[in-house]
Length: 86
Image (cartoon, rainbow, N blue to C red; front, side):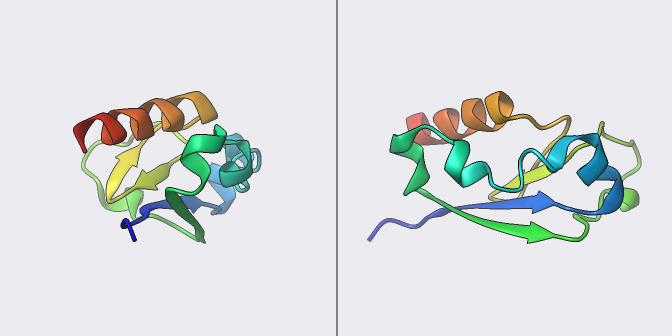
């Protein structure tokens, strides 16, 4: 069994109102070939307040990499890049 890509969706207040309310169910929104390759969980905060530069909300973390200003298309694009590296 292949290791699943871990996606953490920030559902903290700021990220939630800045767009992650639309991404909390991102697995259902991904193209069919990617759905079974990911594991999605919510996170109250991804620790972004500790960064020296503030990324743009909303945030999603994919296998430990923070994606700022996250959208379905930006996350899908990042997943495709990971897929091509494998």
